[in-house]
Length: 128
Ligand SMILES: [Zn+2]
Ligand SMILES: [Zn+2]
Image 1 (cartoon, protein in one colour):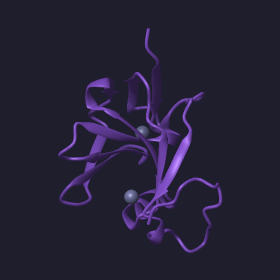
Image 2 (cartoon, helix red, strand yellow):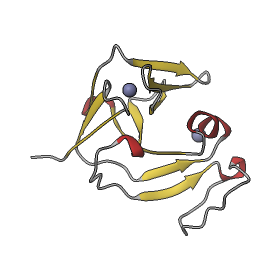
Image 3 (cartoon, helix red, strand yellow):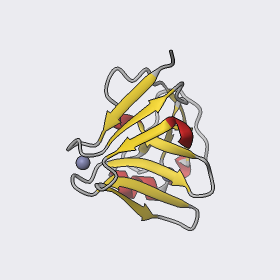
């Protein structure tokens, strides 16, 4: 029997399940993640074939660059997914998972773009 992790958007219309082990959480401080989330993104990632999403009629995608799109609930606005359109995997926002998540923060990326109102002080690796 493998682990199953489930989660949802705030209103519950979009629900998802991931089968198997999840990657550590990576915090992205880039401009796009800041603007979309209002702070920074913290996401795990899984292969697409292990991810099941329900409520697809509520799920909307915003093409945020040539190579990536961002999935969110069109009803409540919760940010849920980030997808490199050429990759067979999906990043999932850590805060969307139901507890206990079993997740752990792993590192920070695009730190040079981070907001100027906070410091990263958890001792985890920081990439520019
Ligand atoms: Zn929702
Ligand atoms: Zn980002």
